[in-house]
Image (cartoon, rainbow, N blue to C red; front, side):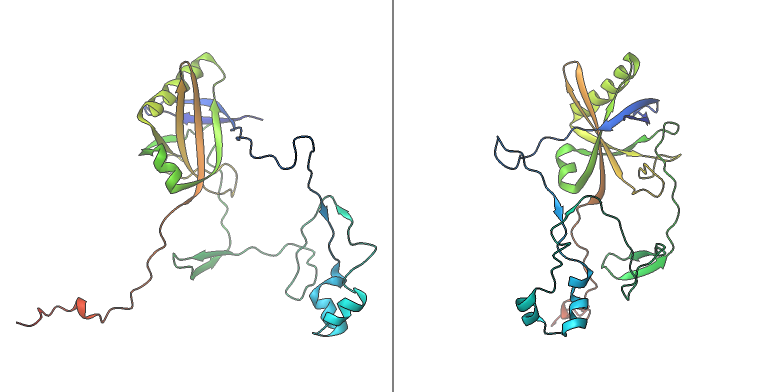
Length: 250
């Protein structure tokens, strides 16, 4: 189902328009042209066939027991087709938890070291049909976007009337003629990343326009990962002679 989005243009004028997931390009088809392939899941073992249970029954070296009797295989269960699955939480001792555990948010520094642990904060969605997402000053070439950001999802912005067609067509033509994408921001000042649901992931959103005659395509690319070189760790060469203030031999 299309969802409404309030979007502002470069002049600060906003309008409610529709968005829908962009249709992906069909990938390679597995199998032969005259045969359809379907994937199914089957049960490979039960609790009694796991390592810990086998160790309790046969000891650490149970290789010969596997050869002699296949104790890891439950003939009545293994190979059964699996339809739906459910998540089950286990304690450190393997006991089933009948209530989900408390979630702890782990904050890491750029070097992967733990910096802070905290209770997750409730964050409201900031993308709706009331408050517009706005153009920001940051623009970049389309070719630069695909090299610097991982696009997780793309939404297509569509018109629902002649007025919104003119509004969106002008926007797409401006971006297409400059061969650039523009960064969009949410919130009152238009500086926040886009969150489409409560506690949802924040996305950097880039608007791309394509025009072909009277037809246009306005795409909203969503990214939650920027490709950056790894940060340099603290230098251990503090005593390097090259950092000396001595002027050398006079």
